[in-house]
Amino acid sequence: MTTRKALEEFLERCDEVIAYASAQYQIFSLQEHANDDEFTIALQQIEEIHRELSSVHNSATDQQREDLRRKRMHLEELQHNMITHKPMGEL
Image (cartoon, rainbow, N blue to C red; front, top):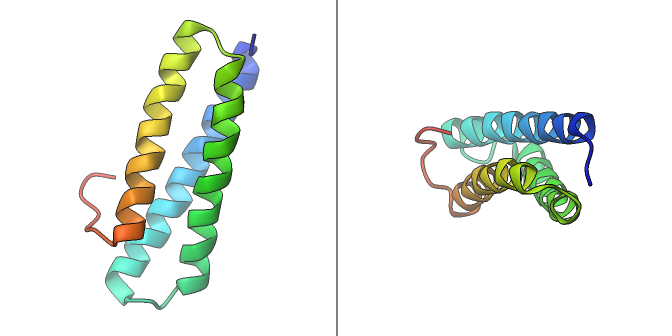
């Protein structure tokens, strides 16, 4: 079972990755390839945290899994929009 503190710390890291990737995506949207390296790093961070999320999910309680599911959906939507270069919307 994942401890509450460990889960909170992991979700905070997810939020940091989401904030960084969202910022890089916004810059990319405005400046067209001006930040290719940072954009790529942001995508890599999303992929890494997504893999980590899968292993945390395996040891989580049902309630924790629901929190992780919502975070996974947010990460996947952001990743999809970044890959397809869709407008930001409400990220």
